[in-house]
Length: 232
Image 1 (spheres, rainbow, N blue to C red):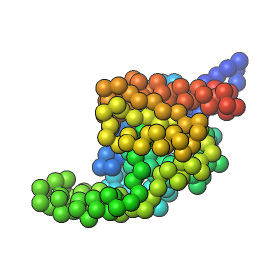
Image 2: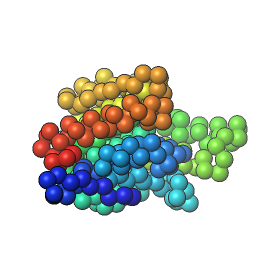
Image 3: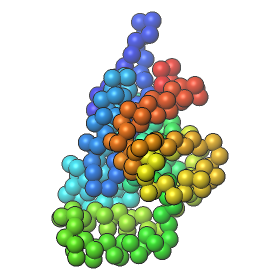
């Protein structure tokens, strides 16, 4: 984690920090292109590992554990950060934003524009372990998938989105299958922005890093004009 500052007329001014939350069966390393670009622009950037992933792969994933990991990162920032989540990281970031909106400046939700509540999720959770064993998929860490599905059973992102007061940006690759409910998300919270990135799939930050980085920098710029830090 690096602290980046800028000077203006001899004064040191902190640019708005940003916290990055990865998806299932990945880790903080997926954000390398974003961390490089954001730190070059002077932003303190924190990319975390969720429980069950990366340096925390020995742990079991839970929603409470994910929320605690995000909270630790947010509290490490000297100013309310922009919170960015991809896929599972998007769902957990939205859950965190709804409950801790006073701690963040806004939230970017990538690759998670599908309502996951209901019977399809429960059925997939029951089938995932059987399928993994039958097809020999995933290796010893496959438990993180069933842990994730169990943790999110009954969770409604639309419900949290409706109650979220901070600015929200939706970012999806055009080829992402998890953009089924984009319009429902926009209707749930008027004022939400939607950016669809051409030729990108679910891992939009990796498929189109330049476009994704520009979206993040534009969001930070918009927060500046909402009365945030002098150099947000």
